[in-house]
Image (cartoon, rainbow, N blue to C red; front, side, top):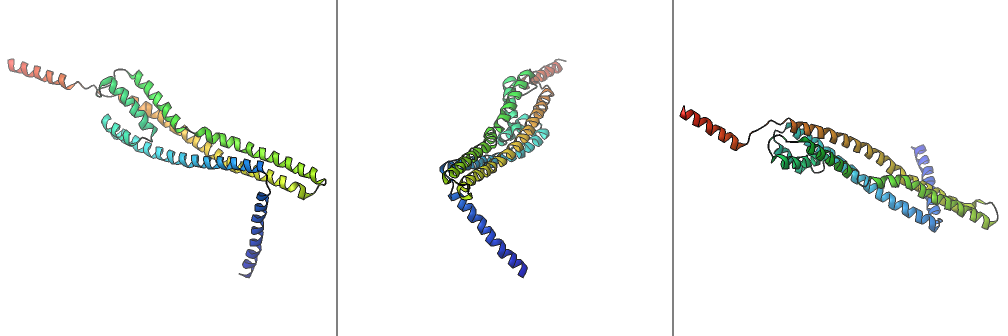
Length: 255
C-alpha cells in the first residue's frame, strides 16, 4: 500500500505537469494556428455528426431490410407486401419494390402476370441506383475531411516552423526559448489534423463496405422480385369466369 501511494503520488505531479505544459503551449500559439485549430474543430464535429447519423441509418436500413425480405418470401399477395413496404421506408429493398409495384399496376391493373418484363427491369434498375445513391449521400464529406485534414494540419505545421525560424532570427541566438513557440504550434496542428482525419477515414472505409453490401443485396432482390412476377399464374378476370359459368349453365339447361 505504501509503495502504491508513493507511486500514485509521483504520477499525479507528472500528470499535472503534462496538462500544465499543454496549457502553456496552447496559450503561446499564434492567430494562424488558432484559425487552423478552429477549422479542424469544425471539421471534427461535422465528421462525427455524419458518422453517428450514418451508423444509425445503416442499422435501421439493415433491420428493416431483413424484416421486409422475410415477409416478402412468406407473402402470397403483392398487396400485403406493398403495405409492409410503406412501413419500411428506410430499407432500399422496400423502395425498389414500391417503384416496381407501381409500374406493375400501371401495366396490369394490379392483377395477373405482367405483359412485358422489360419496363419492370428498367424500373428495378433505376430504383436500385436511386436507393444506393441515397445511402451514399454526404459520404463525400467524410472522404474530404479524411483527405484534407492532414493538409490543414500541415499548413499549421509549416507556419509554426516559419514562426520558429522567425523567433530564432529575432533572438539572434540558437536558444530553445526562441524556437519553442513555433515548434509548439507545428506539433499541435499536426496532431490535431491526424486526430480529425483518422476517425473520418476509418468511418468512410467501413461505410463504403456496407454500401457495397446493400448494393449487392438490392441487385439480388431485384432479380428475385422479377422472377416472382414472371412466375405469377394467369388468372382470368372475374367477368370472364362469370360468363363462362353462365354459358355452361345454359348448355346444361338446353341439354
